[in-house]
Length: 305
Image 1 (cartoon, rainbow, N blue to C red):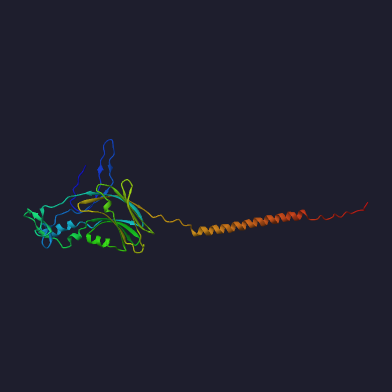
Image 2: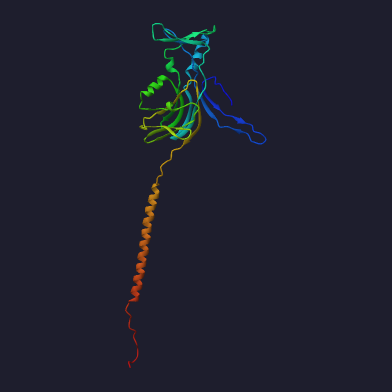
């Protein structure tokens, strides 16, 4: 067993190789795509703002990884409107803080605050923006996007503000919350297809049992995207595998020229049949006429006895 500690959020591609032995040939495993979310962290509550401890000289750099990546991967699907893939969710980290903390209750109130304990001498408080918690990209989603008939599968992590906007409803977005049916270390399969009636998204367990299925009706002219929420990806990694895309099957149509050929052949056959009948009738009449033609008396010369 190999353990790998992720040091940064982002997209990773993992494969293994074996050089083989004298008795067996070497082999390469399939490539797994792994999406790693941001680490958790401890926020300290001040009277007017929240803060973390870090080095002031690199404050912007220290805050950025805490927000996590937004766009992990985009896979073009073209005009294909049916696809499937597998995924699983893994625990990838734990609460990270080099400053111990304790939670205390403010006397005379019901409010609590998280306060630091034994702050290292090289760290100082770094104030967080007022909307920092709403801008952390922690909602991991698979997004089917329609770009004027060309589809793509996008892997995104959305923040709280973006999710609130989606949940409130948009005529151009269909939202599917599958996070309540997902457990860690379990493989799942997703299938999605687009038809004239709408977009169908289905979630299956590893043994093929249907867990959740949603049909989002839409007008093909205004549907922009379908979003399937998978998990909160703080301290988690999502493993993606086995994307299968199926091209749409065009309806079978009878060529127009084939119908004309059939009609022409039918008329020609009728014409030939009539000709044969007429010829046969003329022949019979001719024979009949010759057969019943009265005989001419032969003139006999000489005396009559």
